[in-house]
Amino acid sequence: MITVDRVSKTRSRTRILHDVTFEARPGRVTGFLGPNGAGKTSTLRILLGLDRPESGAALICGRPYRKLDRPLTTIGALLDGSGAHRARTARAHLRWVAASNGLPDSRADEVLEIVGLTGDARKRAGRFSLGMSRRLGLATALLGDPEVLVLDEPVNGLDPVGIRWMREFLRNSAAQGRTVLLSSHLMSELAEIADDVIVIDKGRIVARGSLAEVTGDHRTLEDAFFALTATEAVRPW
Amino acid sequence: MVSRVRAELRKLLGLPTAWVGLVLGTLTAPAIVLLNAPYTRRAIAAGTLTDTSDLGLRDLGVGLIGPMVLGVIAVSSEYTSTSQHAPGARQLTATLTAVPDRLRLLVAKTAALVLVVAAQAAVAATATLGLTQVLHGDHVPAPAPARVAGAILYWTLTALLAYAITLITRNGIVPLTLLVINSTVVSVSYLLTKITDLASYLPDIVGAQMFIRDADFPVEIAPLTAGLVMTAWVAVLLAIGAVLFQRRDA
Image (tube, rainbow over the protein chains, first blue to last red):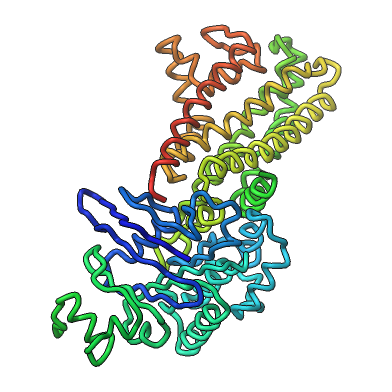
């Protein structure tokens, strides 16, 4: 369960988040939708305790991230990049992360297998392709077998096979009762996997509800999105 | 706590640069003792070397590059970009999502660094002083344990100094360059002692008085006082670094 309650944030004198409020519930995939720069990553970074909100609170299972002991057993996060130092092998990266939360070394190989990187365990993270980095990041998120998953643009950089694999993985995770929150600017992709949708634009939540509720009378989620954000679908050419 | 320190030890020792620091720092001083042996023998024979109890301990200085590298990269490795695909992505994200309590994280990181550097200093000091005994044993008194302990403390505090400065700058290049140049090419702090006696209390100058006696220190400071002054420098810089680390967005 994720609760974000009236979170605001100002950066360089510009307010980037205005009273952002939403929930992500167990057993459901919640899509966090918005154009680039709308505040998705900023919100997730506050949720993960990386950045501080100016006001408001973001809670995971009722507690702020910074108060979680052995957080990886509660929540797994995938942000930009893999989080692994370039010079480290995939396995060495996973092992130190596991050790920090008192998890056994064997978990490193288990999660590498889940994400299909067993053959690359001894490869240095700096030599990973974008898709492999994402998989390594996901492997890190899965180390503690957490009940909550938070993913920032998880399909970015994945090939079609990878996208399909990620989609199924996230659906299965939710089916097992996990809370899955993922951000994306890809509306058709989100419409494929999300049960609930939160739409953010210019730092404000403009819609939230089930996929059907947010789509409303519009033909697609994309149409609904443009109506909600009052952005013209301008031709870039 | 133990698991966090273990993780930080693994992180530090898993970096190739850390091993450059470990190897360089451990081997440079004994190598200098070996290279200088003929010169030292002549100096002892000619009677120009007055206090031979400083021999070996003095040579330890060149190995300080080891603790400096280790102290800097323990922090800077968190801030270097992890890949060209995601220029903003850094290891710090993984670190803080694994250990979100920043104070606990810093305690573990500091403990790991102290363990590694103290062990390195003990090995380097044993090798350097042992070699000095083997080569010039007849003329050099066995080093006093308190002075050896002072040297190990100096190495550890130097690493912590580099570490604290990097916590403040969040970038390893500037502190490492300045520290290495100051300890090898031109010692700015030493030159400052020629201008003002106050410079004798700069951390690198004062710290050396914990274990070196016969040098042209303009102000003579007792080893214990020297240790306390250097510790105070490190404590203040660490406190500033820790407060910034707590407050800044990652």
